[in-house]
Length: 445
Image (cartoon, rainbow, N blue to C red; front, side, top):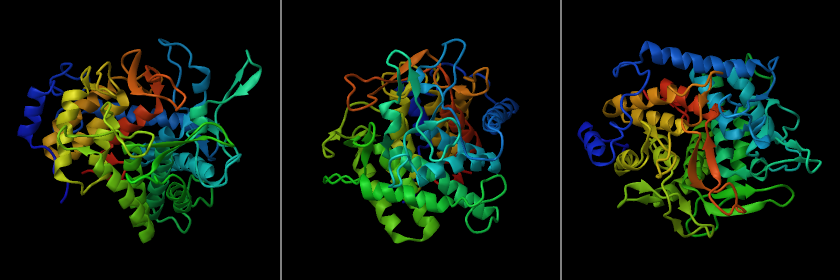
């Protein structure tokens, strides 16, 4: 049965009963009329596109390039050493798709070429994985993880999380490459998928197959819960295997495997998509009308702590034919994630998460006519957080919590977002404005 979202009446009831998302924070700044894109919105989105384009063009030529995920902001000071020049794989995949959504094929292909190069080779691994982050700028051969000179220790330092491999990030790189493959076919490019503005010989489909082949072969959860486990944390040659299973990662895997099955006609990928899909379906908590975050490190026991926004919203985008009951999650999001007129990462509602607010705009837009007003309002909230350099800020508050830890050696939930210009937030806002679903490569309307 196709996914059927909330009726207008249920949206209003959710707003009145749950901590009113539709009412929280007052009127959004800079929003256009509810029945179509306003002049202000169109100009804002064009500005975001221009900011993305300028950052690609800052690297001369037409070669492969990675974009830095964060930039310093005058109000918050310089970036921490680990973040300076760090290009997160997830953010660059999103940026490539945002550029495609705007019809900017040449620049999208430069980002895709960097992801394809990372899939093709690594300074240590030869199995098809990508790392969580790379050095911003022209892609080296092979692409290298980011790092910094630690003057106090007199060493070149690299962050253990960035050099690791999260399953979800591998899937996001594959999604971007599959989007480039589809775009190349629709553009009439011959053979490999290379075309104007892309390094000659890029095989987008082959690179995506290599990445997802690594997921299928390497991180399958051996426990009864199934699905695909978290990946690896830390440095080669012996990173720590992550035994927990993430709902969010398996949403990504379901979408990527499903897309690869469509692109190749190979049934093996349909089976892998079904494996990830079963895990996501098992994480639906009908009583609470939300998705659990996944499992504990044993790969079996469901984790019931916390509510994380991406795990709630992304099933509505990644599963076009998902159960109608999943649409109830929007009521839960309205009640538990509303903050500063938009959405928070988790349920403590300690501040606006701009990226997640843009994700919410796209999810509510997926609700068709019933959700269009809220989608426009959430997008306006996100667009209002533009930094002087053109990208959107990651947060409105100086810092917000996520409730998550950066790695298995963390002793507290030390993963936070800070108010800094962010590539990922910018890309999600462009995708929401364009109504372009990154899990399928198709427009919602």
